Amino acid sequence: MVAAIAGMDEGRRVGRYGADRTMIRTWLTVVAVLILAMVVVGGATRLTDSGLSITEWKPIHGAIPPLNAAEWQEEFAKYQEIPEYDLVNKGMSLDEFKTIFWWEWAHRLLGRLIGVVVLVPLLVFWARGRLEPWLKPRLAVLFILGGLQGAVGWWMVVSGLADRVDVSQYRLATHLTFACIIFAYTVWLAGSLAPAKDPPMRAGWAKVTAYLLLAMVFVQIYLGGLVAGIKAGLIYNTWPLIDGALIPDGLLFETPAWRNFFENHLTVQFDHRMAGYLLFVLALLHLWATLRAYAGTAFSRRAIALAVLVFAQATIGVLTLLHVVQMHLALTHQAGAVIVLWLATRQLQAVTIGERGVGDGKVAPAA
Image (tube, rainbow, N blue to C red; front, side, top):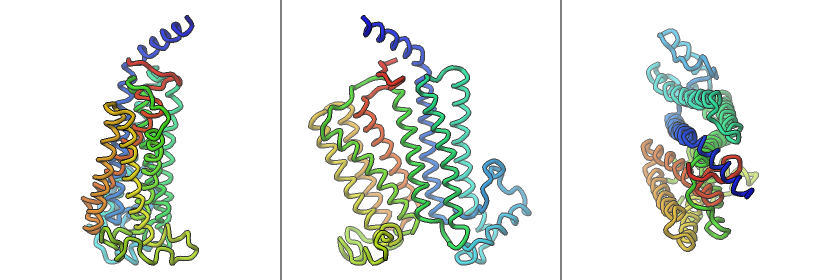
């Protein structure tokens, strides 16, 4: 009797919030898409060497670009004071400066837009009582994480304003990975509001490999950030050999040895390649285990999609390398990484808590 009454209460609760869940899930999906776009624009900013073109951090006033010739000259003069201009771009014209300025400005503007798209609906939903109690602190955390990401971005930029002509690869990889953590968190929140479908997986290889797969996606994204940070993709542009061998010499010539994994161009690219191979093997293992135990379910369909996407992502990565990081290939590769992360996050969520909502820590039946 107690269980029946609890089930009725749960059904009424979900019925009350059912339409709101759909609306909030749609909003969070929009936020996730904007974060994906942010990552791609950030990649373009890096590829065009635009990240240091704005030398100040003005979260509010900085949304307004230069509006006249005097303001453009003022921005250009600030850029001319940093090492990148003196050592890399000395003599560039104002029009050339505007090109890199607009990339960085667009990246920052998109970050501000995401903040607004998160905060305004959050306040509206909260004020109108459309948020379930369990969801409120989680959405507040999402907004806080976005603000922290802005600070991490400026921390990254500062590293290139003195004594360097580029931002620190350590900070760039951190900035990229943190963006992807926020992205995965957003996707997880949206998935938590989905109507009930399948129960979670039982313990087994399918479940274990789902955990390993998502962890490896994050590792690979971080390694990709290191590759971008030291422009390791501009050299060793052959495949499957790297510097004439599958395992080349010179992987550990730096001292202390740990520096090779962050600063040695050969080692950083080699690690990214090897992690890509491992990620593909994990995707195949997850596919095999899932088809074996859960054929014909949403789990198996997503496992198939994951294996296909990881293979496609690896192929684009090879093409990016062979074509010496052409922008359209590099940005497709970066977007592909985030899409793989999206699917891997949803798969892990499905195998651990089922295809369902988790409001108040309870399983939510379909609204």
